[in-house]
Length: 122
Image (cartoon, rainbow, N blue to C red; front, side, top):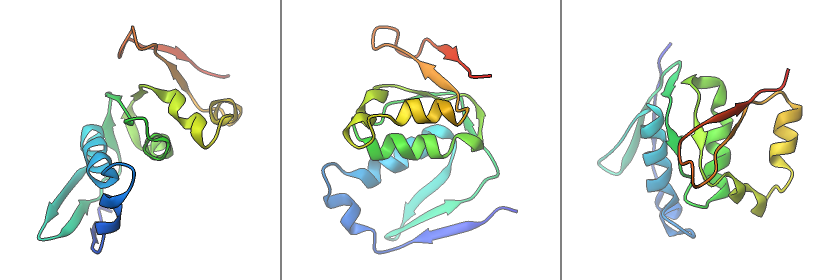
């Protein structure tokens, strides 16, 4: 069942290290989310799955990276996270722990851009 969510009073998100609100919305739209700001409300039309299939740059913000990873069960296609080392700010062992949980890790160097080299734990 699709659900519509409205978020209000979000102004504090704009006043952080970066405009995390804009970056979150941009990333979610790249992933296939139906999300808009109308009359000072964030309106999210929920979906069962997000398209995925893109390379996401979390703008050196470990919170944005964790948002992308938290949604992995909702992607129809694999998602590449560029600059994935930014998670080291808050959780240096994150990728090691993620692998232990059987998470699929995508390895891409800055030189390769979105060229993918998948490593999957069995």
